Length: 220
Image (cartoon, rainbow, N blue to C red):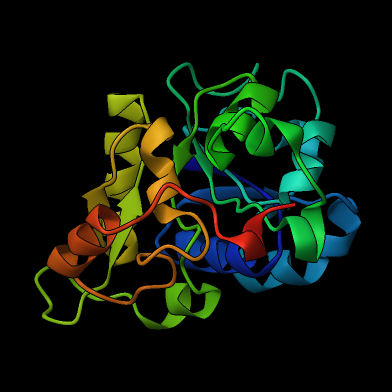
């Protein structure tokens, strides 16, 4: 599968490592340009590209950049992607630590991924936002393993969600359908499921126990 990854930090870098190891054709981009990705490309066999080129022909695109950087991504980013491209948003809102106050989230009550979706102009699937980056390399397990970790996945496009869940299964993790994008507050920072290393039943329980009130530490 042709996969584009925008953002080469901890999550983006480790997804690049695992997805190339599984045989996928991965293009990776960051804000500093392809010349800064030479080492990752040599390690993994991924193709370093400019952000504008990351989605070209891709069936899946992972957007894993700080929330404050989302509005600066190029317009028409997915114009050259596959017609049924699934876009994964891994982002979290950290207003005090990194992103500053975002009015759409604070005042309009948008979930983080709904806000991201509006700026990208394309439906997104929220996944990997509460996953420890090192777990992508270290905690993958075969299907049926008793210690297989489950990840919540939220989104409105059922076909795209199914594609993302199948890819996560291939990466070595179970998934739990966390509902539509307006329900994705259940997996935002400081919710019970955020950072949870557990199986399907525990993840479902954690999602059900989430509170819609954003904690003070995660408000601008």
